Structures are given as C-alpha cells and as structure tokens.
Image (cartoon, rainbow, N blue to C red):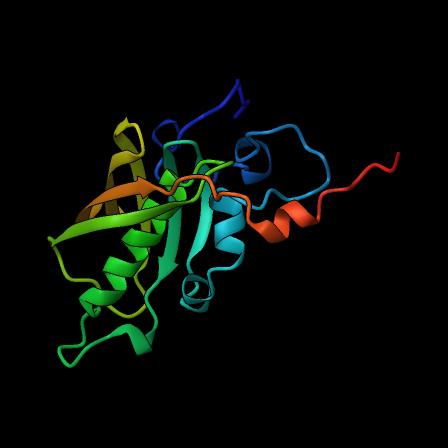
Length: 178
C-alpha cells in the first residue's frame, strides 16, 4: 500500500500497522527528540511500558496503541481487571492529547466495559479528539479485540500553562560585558 500524506488510524485496515517513523513527525527532524508532546511523555512512562503497551502511531489529536493481556492482568474471575483496561485507554488518550510544545494532563476520564477480555487477548485502542477549546479538550477512545469493541473511554484534558521563567533561569542567561 502506498502512502499519500498524513494518515490517521481510521485510514488503516484492522490489522495494518502504520509506519510511526513517518507519521509521528510533527516538526522537522533536528536529530534531537522534543522534550514535550506524546513521544517525549511516553519515553518516560514507565507504567505503560511495564505493561507492554506500545504506541503504534499518533499525531496531533489522535493515536493508536496496542497491548496484550498477560496473566498478571487477570482478576479472580479469570477476566482482565478493569483497571488495566482503563490504564490502557488512558495511555492512548494521553498520546492523542499531548501535542508537541505542550504538556497536557487528564482532568477526568470515564470508561464503559462492554465485553470481558482474557489472558492472551491482543487489544487495540484508537483515540481521537472530539473537541479542543482553549486549554481544554475531550477525546474518545475505543478499545477493540479483533472486530469486537470491548470498552469505550471518554477523557477530558487540560493543557498546562507554559512554565514561567524562574530567577534561576534568569541568572543562567548569558551576560554581555561592556
């Protein structure tokens, strides 16, 4: 399949993996990884990485992540503990709402569990921005197992204001000598 411009997860087939090296680039490559945005945040997200969550693709306002249910994620009914599904959806939400140049956090999130999942199930979560107004946003995440929708999540985001320079920052400014 030939690529033509930027594509969102909705453009991909159900099992197609989109090349993240091309589509996640939102700024010209400088050889230095940006310190903000989804890629920078995920690089330091030890919880999501520990659970084996992968970011398949993302861009401003959308994302797709994958996770396989491990034995440790199951509860006493031998189904996936809902907290793991919530965390998976929440990570996908974070990838969709963290634009380069900003730091965005969740102000709230709700999930509806529609079908149980089990040890060994491979899940895919697709998130998309519904609305963004000022520093607030609403995002919907759909968690699927194959063709089945197993959970839907709605996240509310808040972008933090840009950090203000501190006196330590001001003193680090180069001075010119007369």
